[in-house]
Amino acid sequence: MRSAQSTSRILLIDVSNSFTKIATAINGKIGKVRKVATPKLTTETFWKTKATLAVISSVVPSASRMIAESLPCEPLWVDHRVPGGVPVSYPNPRTIGADRLANAAAVTALGKLPAIVVDFGTAVTFDVIDTRGRYLGGIIAPGLPTAARALHEKTALLPLTRISTVSTSVGKSTGEAIRIGLLLGAVGLVREAVARITREMFPGKKPFVITTGGDSDLVARLSSQQGGGRVIDLVDPLLTLRGLLAIGEKNL
Image (cartoon, rainbow, N blue to C red):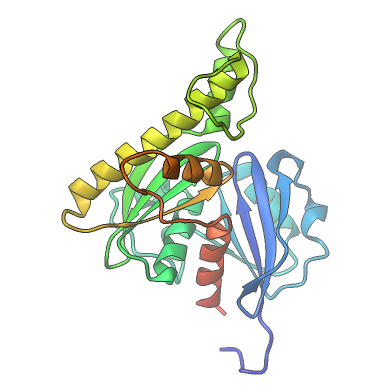
C-alpha cells in the first residue's frame, strides 16, 4: 500500500487491431494520450516511460509479446482473472477481449449500472454489465471502417470511403451514399441492440448506455437527431483507459 505522500504513476496501454493508445496516469489523472498504429509498435515505444506499474489490455498476441519484452516496469495483463477486474458470468471467460473487460471495469467504477458499453473500433462491440457489476456477455458486429473496406474490396467499382459526418439521408455521390449507409446502419444497430438487450436482461429498467471508440461521437450525434428518443447517454473516448486505471489503482 503506497503512502499518502507518494506519487502513483501507472502506464496504461490499450492495444487494438488498428491502433494502440498509450498514456500515463499520475495520481489517478490520465495524461496525454499517444495513439500509435499497432503494426508500427516497437520496443522503443516504451523505453522512456516512467511508471511503477503498466496495465495492458491487448487483443493482438504479437504486440503483446513485443510489449512484454520492452516494458520498463511491472506489467499487469487484463483478462478475466485480473485482480480488481469485474466478475464474469460467461461460459468461457478466457475468450472475452481484454478491452471489453476494461470497458466493463470503467463503467462499473462510474457507478452507472446496469450498463451497456458500445465500442466502435475494428469491430463494434456491445458489452452488458448488470446491477451487481457482473459482465454478462454482449454482441460483436463489423466496425464501420471494416465494413467500408469490405465494400471496396468485394466490389469492382465502390471506392474505399472514409467515415465522416453526414447531413442528409440521400447520397448525391457514391462516397456519400456509402457514408450514409454505414452511419445509419450503425445508428439502427445501436437502437435495436439496446432495445433487445434491455427487454431481455433489464425489463423495467433503463440501462446506462455509454460509447467509446473512433466513430462513437459521429454515431451518437446522428442518433440524437433521429426520432425515438435519445439512446446513448454518454460518449467517452478514454473509457478503456479509465478501466485500465481503475484496475491498476486496485493493484498498487
